[in-house]
Length: 316
Image 1 (cartoon, one colour):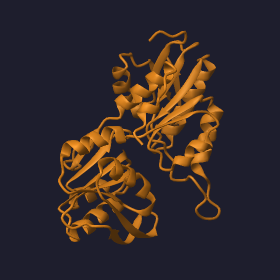
Image 2: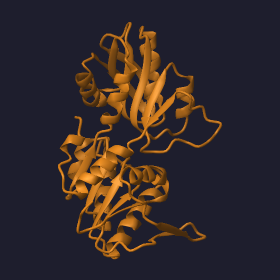
Image 3: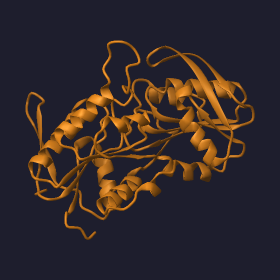
Image 4: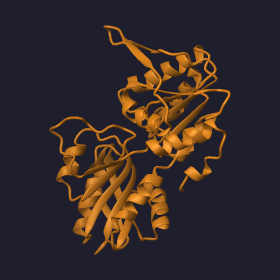
């Protein structure tokens, strides 16, 4: 890479596993940094090498706890104060994205607050994958590279070679995403309609479209408690589906998610590595297949650094 500003890739603690793969894809060494932790839990990240005049990429998904977000903000601030030329936050999973609007009175717009915090810290650009809501890009006054993980999922779905494949949206909100998959794969679309009793609790559910005799893939942006996805899978199987798989970019996987997936009628759950899976050896992960987003991010980092068009990185 011939460039007047050298490229350096750093990571925060929670996304080291992914940053290492991204750096390897670019034939780069991951930059050296450390975190000093005080006895009360306060922490101070530091770069262990000069970033003066460099284009600095900092990799960190901002899933809970909130320390992950704050560590990224501190790293951006440190890079800015150490005279980096540009500071680019690579946020494979953009947390707080579900708070993208005021859907009821007296609530915050968390995604906009996060955008303001990143700007205040001194961020010049953000790279992220499969935002919960596309309009979050408009919360920033600097460039946002919004990558679709479909470029790793579509080849995998084609390799499965499923006969009578249908794509399903787990709810009305996911219809646009699922429709894009069904259009590209040339297969029918099913929409599951659910009524929520309250947050994270699904009431009744029904399906719109032909289910009987189909191998169905439910498409979503994230799996949190897995309540919606497992309920949809069981309902589709009851209606005569041959098999049901689930595909989601972000493995939030909180609370009873793993247990629900293990007990459900799902054949397979296909996820990306924007968020690490639990390392608990007692958790059943036999149905889960993880594909890496490292090469997509490496490709976009390379193109942004070398001022090349990244439009080819967007499948839809």
